[in-house]
Each structure stands twice: as C-alpha cells, then as structure tokens.
Length: 167
Ligand code: MG
Image (cartoon, rainbow, N blue to C red; front, side, top):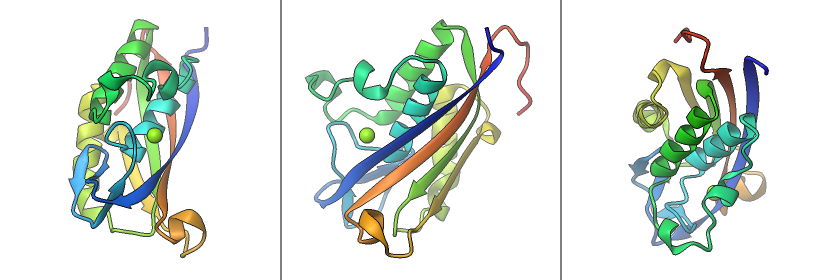
C-alpha cells in the first residue's frame, strides 16, 4: 500500500438570489448565494471530492445523493466530517489540503481564516494543514459573469500507521 496519495476535486454551483452564501462553512454577506440541494458550499464540496478521490472512495454524489431528502439543506461541513470518518475507517488521515475558489466576488480574504478553522476542525487536523485561496477569472466565463462559482481542491492523505504529520 502507498504511504501517501493525492486527490483532486472540482465543483461548480450556480449563484442565485434568495440563498445565503456559504463558503468553507462561513456565511458571507452577499446579495447572492449558491444553489444546491445542501447548503451548496462549493469549497467544501471540492474538498470532499478530493479527499474521497485520494482514498479511491468515489465522490460526494455517491455517498450523499441529492435525491435523498436527508441531505436537503445540510451543512456541507457535516458532510466533510463524514467523509473524513470514511477515510479514517479506510486507514488514512489528511495530510494537507489546498483549495482555490474561482469567483468574481465578493472578496473572501476577511473570511479565509474562519473557513480554514472550520475545515480543519471537521478534518481533525491543524489549521496549518489547510489553505484556502481565491482567484477571479478577470470577468471571463461563468465565474466572471457571476453566474456561478467554482472550486478546485488538491489534498494529500497519509497512511494512518505513520506516527505523525508535520503541521
Ligand atoms: Mg456541489
């Protein structure tokens, strides 16, 4: 078995009026929010898919289908906690996560610290193991026109029999 594996996740949600904007488990003041069956936290969804991918455990939709009313409006941070439990049961722990939000606005810099803390707590790791950053697409494409937001995530997972992870 490999001691270290890498996972990648990507997610997109549409921006609409009348929904709260939840990113990394933080509600951000904004006239638009992301549309989805859960709270549509695109950052946390990309991260969940990266973690599941690293452990070869499929994807978020397989574990939490959007046809299932149990997951309607659910906090994606709760889904992340369950995803981490699944990889823990498979003998893995999170090494680090690097997540990029693609959005024309709003500025997320004031909220990044809290997002990293929320994610780290859900993953039972230090906030130093989590990085959240953002970019615009210079007005181009669906993110540039504010029709939606996208997020990319890359993670490492480590064989949990290895004693310690430098954080
Ligand atoms: Mg999603």
